[in-house]
Length: 123
Image 1 (cartoon, rainbow, N blue to C red):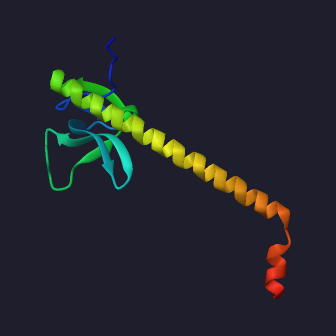
Image 2 (image 1 turned 180 degrees about the vertical axis):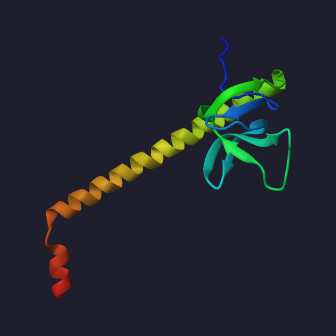
């Protein structure tokens, strides 16, 4: 069974919501300073101008002007990206669950003696 991936091929040209500037996709599945982005792109037709790399996600795309080239290698690479995203999501869910457990422990401890902090100030 073949699943449709959400990633556009490299070389695709898109316009983001609330903009008119075309962008050409040059990277996919990027972590930038612990923030995840589906795509990295240059301005089109300008190309690379100093630090003109734009990061964005799939849901920000308003229009696909041109879809780039894709083959078996591209599809394999996209499957690697999707696996990495899934793994990262599982790791983040585990961190959130562990944090919830710590919060519950703190709440229980606070409920046991709500005046402990006031008595500590007296000492």
